[in-house]
Length: 432
Image (cartoon, rainbow, N blue to C red; front, side, top):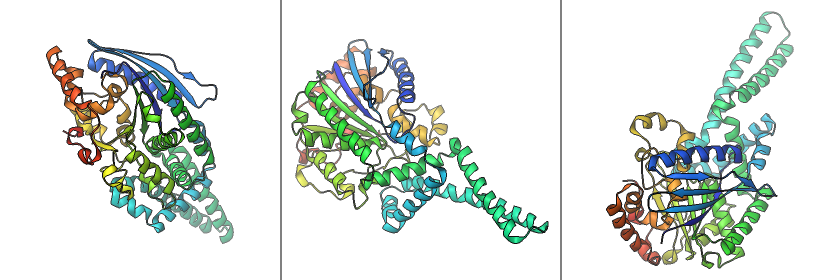
């Protein structure tokens, strides 16, 4: 049952920083992971594939009574995302505004509010901030126009100058406050998710198809005991798409040898699935929900405003598969139990930092630990089914670890059918 070789296929979200930034973060967090659990973990330099679309590295992890080797693939989108962010500011602003109001009048925003009011607030935030900045720029332009009028400048000239000042002032504010507000980035994200949902991004679909073929090849050729497709943030629905399309390419995907697990963390499936036109996407969720040869674990946190919590990615989209449902197992995660108490009050208000905690090292040992999922000896399904035993293996003495391994043996039995599994196994609850 112990994993000695694991293959991770990591699907990032809509993040323009890409490989260089992610690898630096991963390497830094890996060192923290080693210090927390008093083990050694070494990492190779990333090797970029000839097509530039994937990068890979290897992690060797050694603890007292176990060691693992992890092959880690990073699927790249940053070239596509950086192209979006290079678009003219005003084109981005007006396009995103048009999309947002279409979401409002179609009732999609209302569905977001019903599913998770915090996420609906988050997606509204850039538009609210844009309105505030526009009103400030308008106030300055109005005052300037009145000053010109008092100097005797003809009305048409003063209005034209004030209008130019408004445009220049708002554009400057948007550009030079971006590192503080992330407003243009979030507006670009809105445009992308809308266009992706409406199948108006063929370059994304083509790359997803290539990644699906890559996954199918890995499943046939890998010597790993476990293949985990990790989708973080928007990577949750991208990862689900990749796995579903790989299953369509090869219906025996999960039967070749390595166990295949989809791990979605900090997911936001509704930003695609709630659109009426996204029937293909919902069909893919249905396929994953009933496929017996793969496991799907969905981790969510109430504290993360960028994911939907609580949300069932299957029934939440109106998908009813009845007794043949197999997936996903929904796992709530409490970051309060992962972050040191003296850091938590500051941590909780850093929304992007909270969102990335799913893929960062813990400050305290816990059953949910991204780097234990990546580097540890316990298969992911068993880790989620027996979280208390998984934690003991990471932190306990010899006798305690022996007890924990026996507990995990009961979790490695053949998977229960859907009636036994239920919507959320009580043993999978990591919320304490």
